[in-house]
Every structure is written in structure tokens, then in C-alpha cells.
Image (cartoon, rainbow, N blue to C red; front, side, top):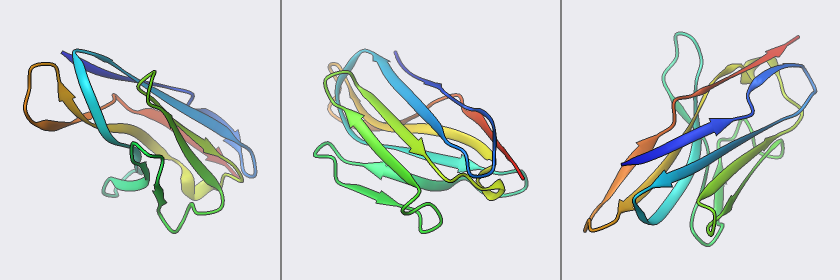
Length: 121
């Protein structure tokens, strides 16, 4: 069994900052890409940022220069530092990881339960 547990969402004023964290636990052999997605009301889920095992990162154009993704491979964690938040960033944010379980030969996608981020104007 594998779990992704997120923390750090909340309510913040425009221009403020939040930091999201996600920890993967369970029968994990290895993790490839980790990342953050978000889904706003009435919209599809979209990639916010992703990071590889060697910390190569990519970002959605809308968050470049404002958000920073990082990971700790030893602790199986990924974080998203969000600065200069805008009302348009309001969404449920989901942690994602591509994980190979112990005794498995393949990788599978796992998701956290989601954490609400609300940015007031």
C-alpha cells in the first residue's frame, strides 16, 4: 500500500505565500517523477510543476518565476513554494508521484487527497 499525504494549504491574500508539502509512504521501492497538479472549480486538472529524481523541474507558464518545486529523495517528499499568489491560483492542489512498489516491476501513478488553496483579492 502507498499513500501520498499533503499539507500546507489554506487561505492567503493576493501577493502572499504558501508552502505545500507531500510525503509518500508505504511499500515503495523507488519514485520517478513527482509533481503538483491543481483543479479549479469547473476546470480540468492541470499540471503546475513536476520534478525528476535529479531535480530537473518544469512549470506551467502561469506559475513560472513565482512557484518553486523541490524534493528530498531520501525522505520521499516533494514541496511547492508558492510566492506572489494570485486569485487565479485558487484551486485544489494534488500531489502526484510515479512509484514502483516493492516487489513490482512497473511504475504506477499515485495521488494525494488534495489540499485547498484559496487566494483572496
